[in-house]
Amino acid sequence: MMNILLITVDQLRWDALSCMGNPFVRTPHMDRLAREGVRFANAFTNAPACMPARASLLTGRFPHAHRVRGGGVRLSEQEVTFPHLLSQRGYHTAHIGKLHVQNHTYRDHTVPHPSYGYRTLLVTDERGTYRDPYTQWVERRYPQYAEAIRVEPGSVRRLRRTDDSTSVGAFPAAASHSRWVCEASLEFLRSRGSSPFMLWTSFFDPHSPFIMPSDLAGRCDPQALPLPKKCTVAPEEEDRVRRKKAAYYTLVSHVDDCIGELLRCLDESSLAANTAVLFASDHGEFLGDCGRWGKGRPEDESIRIPMLLRVPGMAKRGAVIEDVVQLFDLAPTILDLTGSMQPSSMQARSLLPLLEGADPGRAPFALVENNIELSRMDATEVFEKTLRSLDYRMTVWSDREQGELFDLNKDPEQTVNVWDDPGYAEIRADLTMRLLRRLMETEDTLPARTNPF
Image (tube, rainbow, N blue to C red):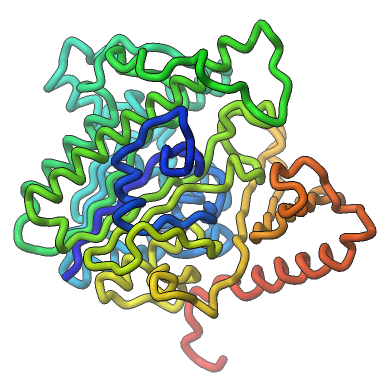
């Protein structure tokens, strides 16, 4: 039976890998996965926010179906997840690192987390914030850094506007959150027993705040980095912005170091011959482009993600697949690789047919959903739907008639909105109908119909 190693990196831009031609970051181990497997050049998240995106990955369902419409909405424990299905097949299912399908703010992190089908579950939804497995590991292994790794909760950082801050931590890479995720994953792999396994190794880095381990602070030269695109940076802000980008790329390369350890473990234990490795990010990061940091918007910086797949014995080594795919497609792919049943409620499609050449039933566009509260004081919710194909990006909102439409062949940077251009009226109407049809096709069909009436 095929083993599964799923690796996710939080808030990693689609182009923040050196195999994507990025000269400012070194990611040799991610590059190795692309070289020995396949790279999906047009992969998109299901939602540019952690909780709905991760809920979609677990269930293979769109946010409007699993109902985690945005941050702060917990995934129902009644949802069928791919770990549930693999457990039924006899797999030892494990998750280590960030899961974030439950609210982590104000949760008692010493209380057992809902399993969602996992047999082994070590959840740390933020870096150094709670009394969780990571902070306890640091207290045991590196007590001298127990206070240095502490970080304020994300809700506090947003209130104080420090969530996208940059700093050099008073701790080394050996005590970092990424290192803990790596060490715990290695321990699982080395003591896995005889049963087949599915391990989701989930890194929090390079999610903000960008806190670099002290011994990695000089890894990326800020002055060598270009300023963000599609915005103007004031001269007095240039140095600060470059340092933030350098910190982000440093954290990306630190995660890559850890991925290298995992791949080396597979090689040395002979697991590589029977372990499929899947790699993706939950969403992107603006990294200053468009004058923004973080995610939560429909631009490619926020919704486009890296995705890699390496399967033992695969023929298409080093291939680049151009078809539009989405994050939640990893769920049925894992089921396909392990010979597990795919429930009818699952709306994603396995990626394996694309390795054979084509998948005629695949939608030629991504549906990306977002949900926004107007403010902390005004709980009115705005729903955002984006259709992203190879040729166009169209976004509509529930609180306005004006949408966005970009012709990506003429305007790949998405700077000219042609929504009201008469020359695009027929295209806009066609895309609107495609979006509507996709939403209707993926209406939730749970609970199942049990009788005619």
